[in-house]
Image (cartoon, rainbow, N blue to C red):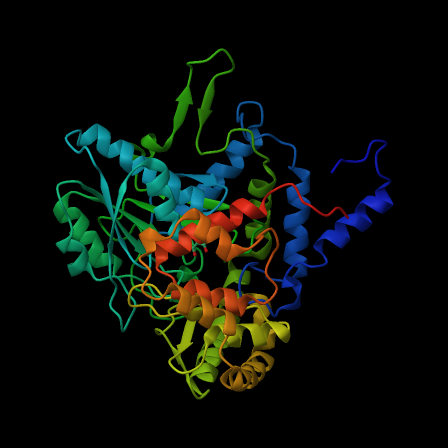
Length: 479
Ligand SMILES: Cc1ncc(COP(=O)(O)O)c(C=O)c1O
């Protein structure tokens, strides 16, 4: 595979780009409950324009690109005010929830190294609903994850269970507002008490809810305290590229004060080049996302977000009632924002998803883990609110189709082959065999999901890595 030797004409080039994205998820349709957070074309345009205006400003050096410092500090001030902070609150703009979480975990690790040097093997305590980004951070940063179940009825973290696993090595507790998986808010006030009592840090992952929940509260919805108003909360992650509807690459990580944030920062003078001092993981970075986030927030405005939220609250109530009215389906928990999880004891949820996909809907599969069974996940966007009736009508039909669908032969075959096999006896060769050539994206996902769902989590991880390792390779076919 080569690239053009003479340079491609613009017309041909953009035609190719269109061709590339033709097979992508159609998120503009309003029928995708997830993946892209979409508040409408007008808002997107403003984000796009601001993004391209600052595309080539380099966030590496805020002394040369002073705009970056201005944007970032203004966004932090907005975030701090939004989340019960005060003039001591500090933070940074990051590329997304994962980076915000990584940085908060790194700050916790290095803060604890400095303050509690006796700890040799630091641990963080996570409810099973805490986002995978904490596991990623722990694996990258060499920390031990101690996972605890959640209340199987409410799907919220259980402070008593978290308390029971605190050891002299514990450095941080984690709660979510709300959790990605079931959209419920952990009892942050009780976690705050626990953290204070045991001298621990407490991170609240409000990547999903940080921006939106204050609007829910203002509209009279019951929102428990989850932010810096809770004593004991030491850091919060809040994404803008989710429910603030800004273009991707936009999140904030906030700290109660500088004493902890200091440990997030990185400086290096031990090489032969320029002085490196970074807030986050990236060095050279486009200021496009930063400018776009600032622009979209100011364009939609406080009243605009309130109105968007009002519409979403109505839509979520309707969707929840509609799901509960369909025979065989039930909600996994009462949604406290606009994230829904529902499942069935009798119908294959992966088949429902496949049928819905056939009708142009995107809803997301989630695998069984701990007390959480396999389920269907939805994040409700402003652009979805116009499509609620059509969604419920199609869902009802697809549930009936899924009910009638024969069991997957492939999944049954794999299940039988794997019966009684100890996961640690499965070799990489076995996995390669299972994946076949593996250098293509699967068409029908329901079989694949059913197979993965049947595997123990460690094996799922190994299989996914093997798959990815085969997928991102030099393509065989050229187009
Ligand atoms: C609660 C929560 N935390 C963290 C993340 C990770 O965010 P990102 O995908 O922006 O890295 C997500 C993503 O959906 C999330 O829902």
